[in-house]
Image 1: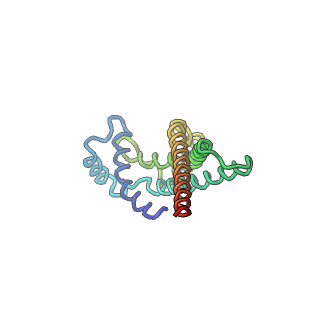
Image 2: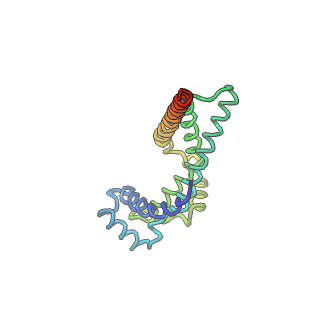
Image 3: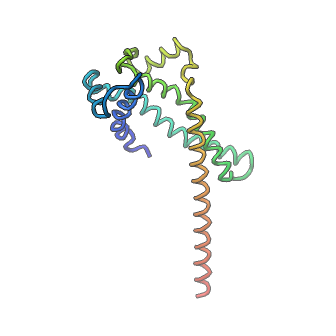
Length: 194
């Protein structure tokens, strides 16, 4: 499932860093994507294009793994408590709950990644030596609440999106299973009448 995840992120990280730099300061880093990328590489070295990469890789991998795991755990808990399988609608809600839980657990890494990407662009000093140093500084100077200051928009985007994805997935899988069973029954009837 995760094969190629790091390689994909290694290709995407520079574009993400450049895009963030272009939008993160007043007026943004001037020029187009290419010019901004060259400017970052010139002033910060190639490492500037990968600032926050480790935090991104950790957060994305952990988030994906936790999301599937929590979804399964929530559906099993539903089955145990209700004595029946959850409907696609309920599974959508369980998917939304798993997304919200994952966001709560991984939001600090997202904040760390953004802070690492923002430092060193014009108008922003370099404050952190790496992801752990950044996390410690945020917690010590601003408190743990700083990791969740901008969480609400993320919840409002991710929970309905992931919930909708699970709802549609479960709905389509049930429809396909019913269609498959119908075709198998039809084939068995046709074979019996032959």
